[in-house]
Image 1: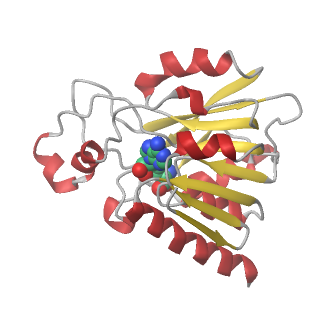
Image 2: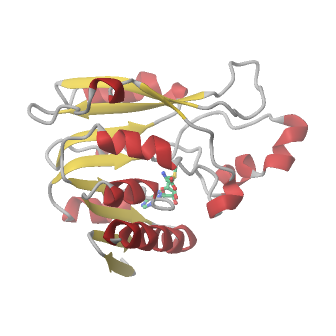
Length: 227
Ligand SMILES: C[S@@+](CC[C@H](N)C(=O)[O-])C[C@H]1O[C@@H](n2cnc3c(N)ncnc32)[C@H](O)[C@@H]1O
């Protein structure tokens, strides 16, 4: 591990999630957006213009992740983003670990262009699974299983798969716990929402550039929460 930053109620680790997460102990919720595993080819003329697809390949964000990072001994519940093509592997794994789960969706009004003789990639699933006593919370109108928000252009934070604030705020509002860990923090979107909701946050990111972005974004969230 090469760096730890304490920013208000957030602790951020620069390093490898598979080494660091097991050392951090129990959190009410693990919220993660790990590498998806999907066929990222195609895109034609639009591919160059958008740039994000090539950055996903360069950073290995289309190679999947080791499911062992999901550990019910270390959390009361998990939220895991994934690609449609991972559901058949991930759902049985998570269903074997937690007594209850649901598949929710982020709906995107601005999906990438149609490619690979498939449907538009206009929804991204996120699985929420929980143990007894850690069930989802919220008012009637905040318990929808989908949230619509435009995807972020990669130029905003220099990262190709940033989750929008509206999506992360909705997810955090539906969690009952007060401590949140994101082992694949990226630019810190989970942390921004967690700090905004008054929760304790711990994030891990291995890419130094994205780690610096997360520090900046979470500093901003801490400042806003204090004013
Ligand atoms: C899909 S992105 C998360 C994006 C994040 N949700 C956001 O809004 O910015 C996954 C992130 O996990 C990081 N990552 C991948 N493997 C990792 C590992 N073993 N340890 C720590 N971080 C890792 C990648 O560098 C990438 O930034």
